[in-house]
Amino acid sequence: MKILYHLSFALPLLAAMTLSSCTISEPDENIGESSNPQDLRLTSITFGGMKLLSVDYDPQGRYSKITLANDLEYNLEYNGSSKIPSAVNTKEWDEEYNNETDREEYVIRNTSSWSNIQTNSEGYIVGYDYKEVNYNSAYYDWETDTYIRTTDTYIGHSTITYDADGHMTSQTFNETCQETGSTSSNSDTYTWEDGLLIATSEGDTYEYSNVDNKLLQWDPLNETFGPLAITNLFGIAPSKFMSRGKFDGESVQVAYNIFDNGLINMQRRYEDGQSYTYKFNYQKK
Image 1 (cartoon, rainbow, N blue to C red):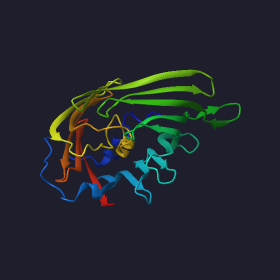
Image 2: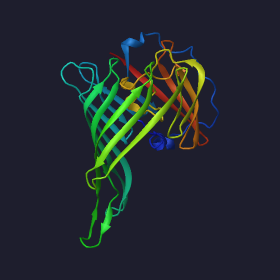
Image 3: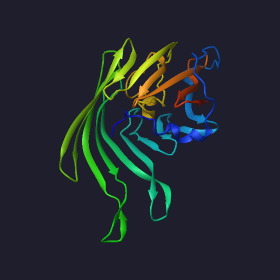
Image 4: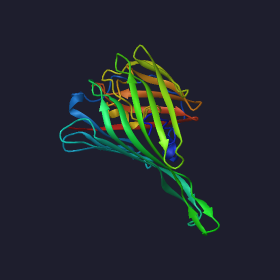
């Protein structure tokens, strides 16, 4: 399963709580807590009091579960005291109309399991085996008078590369579909300039503010890399905070409100004529 994908499907879930429509200015760096950022960890991102993202940790302080709204869930498993996960299991949900109950329901759309996870000397993941199951929309079968949901199962291996500075530059997938026996190979590439992610092979583009990302922290709402990037298992984050970008052909403006210690306090997004504010919440380790 790809770790890098668009998050635009999840962010509009709370659109009913839309805030004011306005343009976005540069973030203010001069507010926030003075606590040592090394003593804090992200626990959630909220929007109007509702949780958009939740982060759980095991007793050793390692990431154990990351949940994005009602749509996406990562579960990380470890062997012994290792900081590198031995397995990553993912579930993705989607809304689908159920003809039998005559209403929209959340259904499993995709599951993925990673194993044989390999890392480089920096601790970044460079490869893993995976099994991905895609659940197709249910259809009505006239012969059995029932609704049937079929699946597509893929067995594969992913390889990830980085540049000399630790930025992810590509991810390749080689897989076989169990149902058909067909094989496929595809790659995503990421272009970096001066420590900044500029563009992806899928057409994403990024522009940045003048505000330094002093802690090189990943934004879990990043459209390209997604929530799992906050584990720091997939390379170095951009050295500045994003100000605008284009994803799936849609333009987005972003501003960050930064604590004095360098951690993200709030993110404000302007897209589709509306402004959304997300609050980052932390706790002491």
